[in-house]
Length: 255
Ligand code: AP5
Image (cartoon, rainbow, N blue to C red; front, side):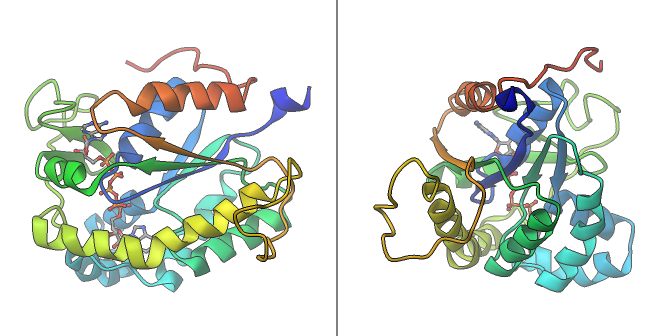
């Protein structure tokens, strides 16, 4: 049926440190879904000392957003690789302009977004997590000394390579990232909320005078809230199963 063939074309939306990376990779481990994280991509560029990396390094360390042109340059070629697949974008789009660009890209290919998940976690909760976070740079795998510890302290579970701290994970920089989220990124959620509520399921009561961007119906926007470790995961997994009944679990799980 149509429902069985629905593709996961999803945005993982939420504040810095809300758990986007953690939950996105859990989904990708369980299901055959590709993921694209602009934060991970930019950190890889920095690590490899590319032109983009040199430009992005100081900006990220300050907690500012990398200019749209730069992000768009690194993302565009990657988006091509997602065609006809199930996918999740983590950390993109982050500005109105990036959102419009993504829309144009997807519309041209007739592959509209099907799900937007908004992770809603309180600022105080997030602030507490950041100082405990460790990352495996090449894969983007995230650990937390109080929530999901690596098997061997300081090393990645899968490769055994060393974990590092992110230079933007200190309280001052984090405050700036949170500020940027409220000023530049959260308005994007209203934009998508309008699109999702313009489905032909009923009139758009929330924004009766706003003309919605034209989108084929079927875009779902769901806010998931929770503070403690495993509150959000079961909600998210259930949401994916309900929204995409044809989604299969990965056959041979990697060790
Ligand atoms: P990016 O890497 O995207 O950072 P972010 O949005 O700030 O998000 P984080 O990676 O900090 O957090 P997350 O939500 O993935 O949380 P995580 O799973 O790690 O971007 C970094 C920078 O790059 C930006 O500041 C910007 O400069 C630039 N950039 C990126 N994309 C851009 C774009 N499109 N345009 C312009 N600039 C861009 O979890 C956080 C911690 O909490 C971890 O320690 C984790 O283990 C722990 N945790 C997760 N879930 C739970 C839980 N349920 N309970 C307890 N602990 C948990």
